[in-house]
Image (tube, rainbow, N blue to C red; front, side, top):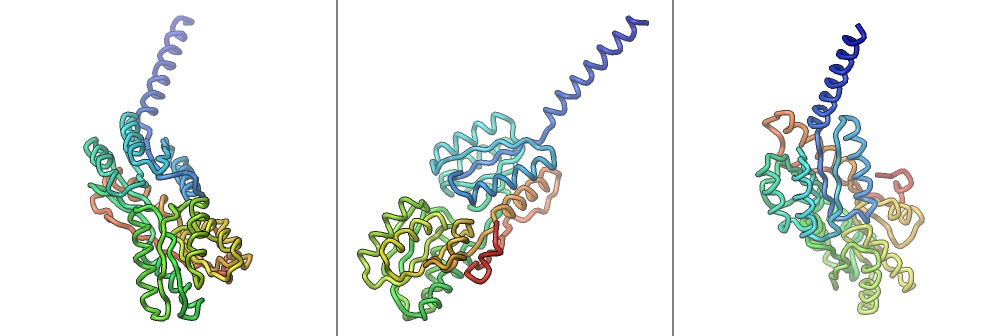
Length: 304
């Protein structure tokens, strides 16, 4: 009897171990590569992804490209070797990552671009209405200046969302004949870089009255430069980052940001990928996410 019980126990343990291996092998694997993680925007996106993945029992593999497209391609290659089922791609260069997209699709991986689109056979793109964001911020800036004055654009890296924000901004400024765009310089969406760039802008343009920054990271550097100059220069931006929202609530020269919703973007992106993973045949190729103006009136109540 003892021998029989021992044999049954061994078989049971074996089956349990086999079931564990099978379960581990069957576990959904989600890879997400970010253009950078030195940004609260993407940190909040990762938090939302981890929360969603935990609810469905999926494994998440995350990499930070650090704005290096070669590293991002290499990171995707590593994820594919680890057997990911879904790739959520936040490209550091929309055109440069095309080879990574094609590699993933060649291996049957579902590819969803988040926040910025990518060239190649992406299944779905989920991102903010970036042109609307630039338009809203620069309309706000022009109206805050009473429709007259010199303004500048603090540009960023050449990914589609940034290009669209600048396009929307210029469209808004063109509706105000009294507004003159006198300078456009690249702050690389980085506080320290933007600080030096805006200091030069201010020195070069004695009548500069307003600045639009393509993101809040650059805007915080611009804010420091404006405050250091002692000049009355109004600042608007795009993102809705906590630090920027606080600055707006505090009544600084930073008067408005057009907020995006990074948590919603990654949740919707994962939802689109899961729909395809579960066999959906009619999934949108693009899902635009609305943006919202944040100014002194609603900054205290806003958060990502």
